[in-house]
Length: 502
Image 1 (cartoon, helix red, strand yellow):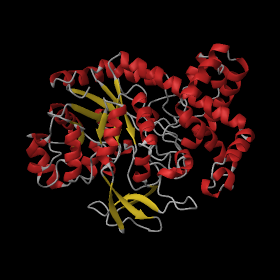
Image 2: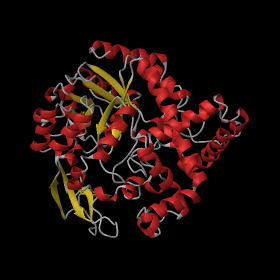
Image 3: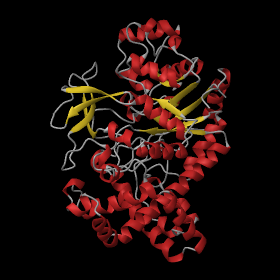
Image 4: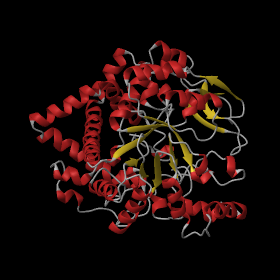
């Protein structure tokens, strides 16, 4: 798909409007798909769809599973249409904030209703409906059995780290698995059912979009959380000690943005062990994601070539070391399973010649972010539009950046503004800056241009999705209803057609 000039919008599902406190896979997702089609867009880019947790800031990049779906995204309206809820179940809706997700309130409201849908399904489901559910469970058994047991176990042991669970289940002995599978049977079945609902609603939306020429770009984080079903079920592929505690964790070294680097704390992969398994877990994970999405952005692509490893006892990422990963062997293995590998490399930040060369050899497109283009040395800046290449995606900004307007009003100093005006050949203000960036992205030689919806609407920093390095007030921004109207679709379609991206 990336061989033709095209464009799209970045908007996570949670940011959609809805009556139930959080964007979901219901009617508003279909309305947004219709807007994209009317605006002549080709791509809808989203963040990871995996489960989120209150204790991890509700980040879609910090999940208890690399495979499961976020069941808070299940549409209640569609459950009413299917008879799994009654319309009276939705009559008393709390007054949710319209501009931000109150994740705690959403959980308190939606989880009892999802439980009610679960009970009704297994009370009234027909043979055909039960067969569809059982087929889903069988098709996804390789990850679903582990996740559906792990999550109830986490609740059963009051959120203790899994390494502190009783030895029989910590070490996954056959007796331990059988004992807790029996004890938690109802909760396990419920988790499987909710994943079934999520998958059914997701693939219905994807089908609707694909039929209208809209393709999903998904996001695959390189690392997983220690407290996840993936590490619990596959401890052999991570660097864990004999007590199954990480002895090496992930991060990035000190750089321009941080004197102490970033200590992420995720367990790092034991690539030698992975190699012995023919990368089986990764092959399944990539396959799962290319079924979910039409294109997959590999977050922190550098880590597939060389990764920064820090001893688990360190307080910062300063004292770490670069460890090479078997990138050629790994990706050749993936190509054997998936000859068409729809990968986008997130190559922001540290980019070595080794990483650039590897991407070029494999024809993986990278990313160019216009917010990074207008510092000193603009003539040689790889993010400046005149230095773009065809095989890349150009972004006005990403979910980790401020909005273009927010950046201009808060972070762009006088010298940056002067360079902007010299580059654009016109006066730049808060009112026109986002539109100027959109035009720069659209006219770039990059085959694909992606704009966050916040920039299409010229919103300020209150619409920012995430501020890296901060633990609260992230991921909650929501799009107000009716902001994306027919006039806006027409204007976006016009500029898309003008620059050959329709």
